[in-house]
Length: 304
Image 1 (cartoon, rainbow, N blue to C red):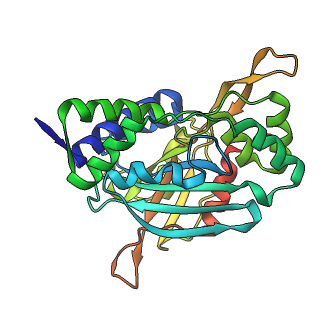
Image 2: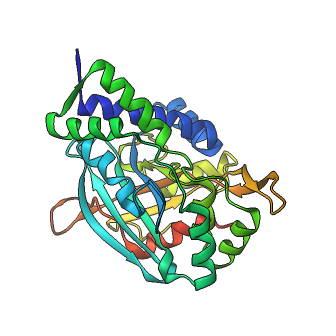
């Protein structure tokens, strides 16, 4: 029996989602509240972060993710620039609208101060690939044939699931703290690597009568004691409004200068909310992203 690319995609996304809601309690609360009210949990997009520099045997920047999403049938749509944060990004979209979009951003390490470039590069330049030559061969076969036999499909799903974690060795604690002074995005990525940065509720398909808008959803989550972003990005009835929970924190493994290991409490992920409006140029729901709003959401993983 064969599994199609869409079946493989769904199985991978299901596993990533289940892992994410185990780590992000606020997302679990959202799921419980929406389900209790007879609504539907539908994710608008997934966000991923990476470093555009020499990352050893893992391709640099967004190119580490491209073979995966393109093999699964996603198509690059748009590019985005965030010069103040030294970030660039792209987003992929699947022809099947039931799948979330994928927003992948990268830190332009060579745009950072020289001393920060040096310690980031030292932390990641000996990274081993989390995907084998066999995995890449399966991705290429899947991209061409749109299916794999069952054994190969399950092997690939396992490998891809394991890909979404930190691929480099645990960074030095001092490195994380120094990078954080310049780029909280960079510090986060050193600690979490390829891990899912966040999933995003698609409010348009939520179908909760008491929460017909993002405003009402934010209000409902606040009433349930979920800590939320202070404001909603975007005007009411605009093409895109966004907000999020605050980020949960985790104990992250770090190395010490004496060769030992320790942990550091750091932000992991938030759960975003997105409500999309009609794009006047197409007459359909806007499916892209807005740079200024995304900039503010990057800050939700800031470490105080």
